[in-house]
Length: 302
Image (tube, rainbow, N blue to C red; front, side, top):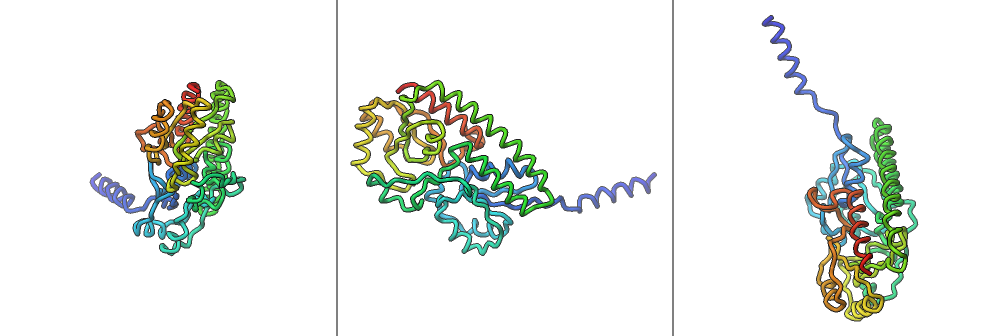
């Protein structure tokens, strides 16, 4: 009996020495992509997000620690469309040699029309709007690209990734159906919204909303007094009451427009970053439901 107990103890000790199966190390450029990789990768991946919750990828400056983390990754997931203007510098500095997934690949981008002075300061997006994730239909393409990248990097778990991707794509379809029903409650003439920076064109294209903003595509761009003045006049003329600041933007411009028009600034929207885990937008699907709910409530006041 004593010998049996000793053998069992030795076997238990030996099992502790056997390492768990390694997870695929993945680096995602910002929080929304980190969530999508996690949704598809599940417990087979270890995801590190460079620009975390409430972080502004437009003005992000990579750290030496980011370079060290990236050098150990086997897959890098980025948005593309010029969104991460700093990513190539980081890849070079880290000597990263792994694969790169451009999540937006295959999506037709919205062209930026440089029709106001603020655009002259917006040099980071190469004349296309990078915020393609604001259309849930595009995120299905994001998921397909991410899944293909995971499968290529870790073919042994291909079926696992593909099954999780299929489930998530179904959830995106459910999100679109719900959003269509919500938007149908707002007459087309009232679907006009002012936000801090121009991050919602894809959402507007998908659901027939006109978004106006004092800043361009980049939060680092400076809005001109002339541009802000025109926006205030338009808000007064069209009686736009739906004003929103994003979680990555400075609220001062919208506060000025609020004072000049009498419209109250509504709850914060989440555009380029998720919230923390205890906030209203801890993942992409929750973020979209929250944003659409807030927008619908705001447009009802127009």
